Amino acid sequence: MYSEKVMDHFNNPRNVGEIENASGVGTVGNAKCGDIMRMYLDIDDNETITEAKFKTFGCGAAVATSSMATELVKGKTVKEALEVTNKAVMEALDGLPPVKVHCSLLAEEAIHAALWDYSQKNNIEIEGLEKPVTDIGEKEEAPEEEY
Ligand code: FES
Image (cartoon, rainbow, N blue to C red):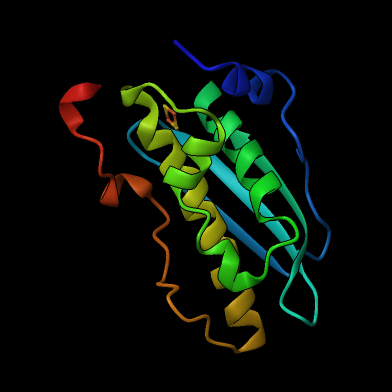
């Protein structure tokens, strides 16, 4: 049911941990399942993400998507990182079962939350970035009946 890539990132998650004095930190949860993800980003003067780490207290798909999300945003500019959507993360993982799609939203929103934190701290505006929610359950796209 899970792709090999999902299993790999679940069993050997990349970039687990924290960044001290990170440029941006974002925490997002889903009150419905109780899962929480925290994303740390280090961003240099050229607005390039030099380091990304995460801590996820959540299901296997949440761990795998956060692991892949950190891999995808590393080396990207802040603007490019906005293109790392939950769809992009899922594609990179060769898909997720439909009932687990919402878990990947946590990864997307955690990136946005960390970027938002960075933009607020530095008083800059990141075009296309909206204020993230702290509870992803509020904007979940996956139909509820699938739970
Ligand atoms: Fe909550 Fe996967 S079940 S994030």
